[in-house]
Length: 609
Image (cartoon, rainbow, N blue to C red; front, side):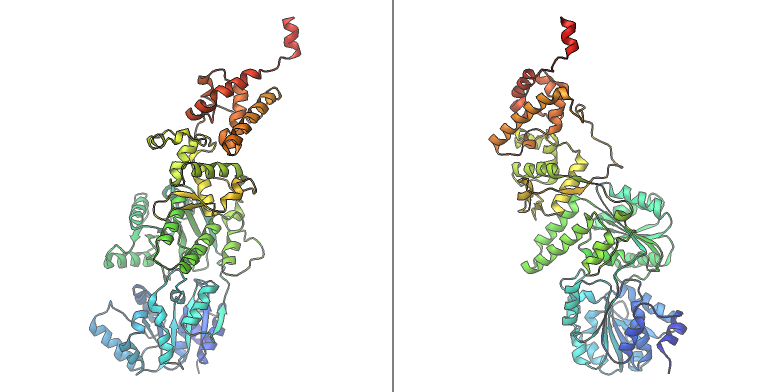
């Protein structure tokens, strides 16, 4: 009798089994059921292909993407294995021929889509055959909590009810504890042997960045790391998919778009070129990727946030299937967070489901804003512990700079509140920067105490708002994107907690010029004036029930001490003094300056005498 190892060596050309393949094959060959969680590239298909050859009859493989069945069957044919598929891409004659081969027992494996597998006609056909096993690939599709839910998968229990003695195997590369439990329940696999392998893909380098200029930064990454390699770029919209493909192609790369809006022939041709040509970049929505077996994808890039960590892991797992070094690169902005929250709120799902979506989104944002090891956080989401930092992600190689963002965050939250909790981040940032745009003037928001108090530049403010939203201090309106304070903001505004955030990377931006230079340090001679200004600021703050920085920031007070303006025109040149503050506080500030002249030194007194 031929052994599993002999088939592995003779048909597949491998010397030995990997991971838990041998144990899984033994379980199925002996008639048992198995639930397998194995990372992409771990060799899941061999776990059911070899038992289908060893056992009498035909193995039925449920696969969600008919576009890939041809490639899978072609690959098996190269190994001398009799395999076929049945799907809607075939004509009637071709389908009849496959049925005859199935009934004659000539097939080791038959691939079908889930909707066909549970049809009455197909179940009747299977009833006339000898079945070796039933394999359910991409089993996470059965879970309504999963990232790729397919309703037809929830009907696959009918196969077990109709053929209770046929061994089954459900396989996935991506599932958290909730999804695994639902796979077991929906497919009636509670008694199946579990084979859970590590989620870790040590050959993948994870890098996540925030900010703008995504296309140029993508090009810089590809040019530096993968000038001739094949890769996948994921975009959030069809329009952006087309634009990014054109952007890369204009710079000399073979870059092809792939999304559901393209006709079937174009999608098929682009997929074919990606799978078979060297160095092709496919630019795609999430419509592309499941089941992709291309081993030499050297990078997967995301221009925008995926839906959740499961999607991120599944999509990045398409890189480096050959075990060689590969990159997972992601860049995202504030609008990505807003869009995810809007999609969740506008969903027709019930509140329980929305809560789960919210938890998954928060976990994803937590991974993005992580200041520690990415891999530890990623594996921890799936219930796996990595004892030490991996040393193979951006945070390990280049530990992110952090800063005490407490005061700046209070400014941002106060400005959101004072503008009415109905405007988006871009508007609020304009107010913080003191930009006298028509809309701001019409709303009289240039008269607010928060107008012009911002000491960060626009890029830094955007980074701050991203992180405040990600951490739950701010909420975004599900329809219009207006920001409002979340309950978590109260202790921060009250000064009851401090906030450490990632510092914005300034290496690729141009700093905004200030109105006037302000000294970083305060001279001893200026200390009395500084204290007098602080005391007046405190009084104004108490009168208005706002934090003192809302009135004037310390940096502004130091600039007043250094410049000692004697007129309104001179005071207007001090950073942090906009027209509104000049009108509100200018006379009093000038009075304090005049009351606190620079003290004369002994030498100056002697010279006068």
